[in-house]
Image (tube, rainbow, N blue to C red):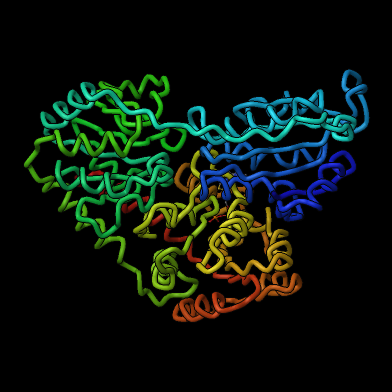
Length: 529
Ligand SMILES: Cc1ncc(C[n+]2csc(CCOP(=O)(O)OP(=O)(O)O)c2C)c(N)n1
Ligand SMILES: [Mg+2]
């Protein structure tokens, strides 16, 4: 559990102190919520964050909304004023059930001590099951927290949920549609990364000869060196994946969640056939009207599809596009210029990261480069928030990842803007002995917004800032600080940073002139295909 004590949640803190639950005291409630978010995303079990009432609770909001949007199970618990003064205006009082309502699947106020076991069970059940995973909220008034739970009321044991399987007749219809398609493409999304169905996706791609595009949240679901892997869709510009989709007459969407990528981008003219494979029915969206919905356990569905689909035609166009894409991705990978080109930074990061290691991306221009250039071979080895797409997630997220994978290398890659939103959690990481590495793309600006301003208006406004000395900032919190002084330093600095037994921060100057060049390059690319 992650959080900050306050007067109105002291009973909970006292109870936790004598329990086996590990509590991590954070330096901002937002940090606690992001930690719980990434804990949930990596384990499928709800991460829990705790705050006091009023301002403590409002500080949780962004992280809770992120978890809910990205489908990470999370339970937020807030303190509340005493129940006899909840109907009047008062010091630090806010109707928290109302505040959390649009950013959770369920929010409940505890009114009687005997209801607590059911409310807790409900909160975890809704966070982890009942459709898409997400956030839930429990509001606990201080007087109720002080009451004794009556004898005989025990914590409730989770029920075992049996998976539900799709109807075989529907799967057979989908296989027929797939076999008839001239140019089918598989699109894998966030739920595929959660469901651990890499083997089934790869098998289907190979037997039915389907090129596979993944969303940012499904990176690594198919190995990047698989001949059918066509890379990541999602940066604002049209890229190789959009060129491929433009040719497709059928999309096989597996675990695709419309929050991560607007469906209008997949099929703007509403001409394609769509097969929706998921554990949940498709959302209603004018641009996403599935021809067939195959709802049920995805692994089972994909196995049946692989057995039933007869397709022999190889996607030659996709293969040649893939060759072109990989050649382009590796250009500038050993560029020696300084400040470093984003392509060089990602190529060096790739070299030092190994199996089981996790890169957590923050949100900004660096995320776009990570999406394109950080090639992954395992699901959840590169975590990107792309439902709510919230700056400030990488550092607290890395803390939670390190907690879960103490022996692996955990790398937070962040912009200088996002870093300053939650860098206080480095002190938490130092205190809790969680030595992950943070690499800052330093451009002294909100780079992604500058990129957009330059593309749209030809100039940038109100997006520049100055930075503190990141090395000194890190060291003031007992962490190690490094500054990259030339391109060839980066690999060595990363290796050294990962050897430290305290958190380390690397200040890496980046040459974002590459952003505008990429826009121009992609415009040409789309024109020429
Ligand atoms: C909390 C939050 N505030 C604002 C935004 C909008 N936004 C997206 S990217 C970005 C700039 C990011 O700047 P920085 O962290 O320096 O990364 P860079 O783009 O320079 O790589 C902003 C302001 C957001 N996504 N999240
Ligand atoms: Mg920046």
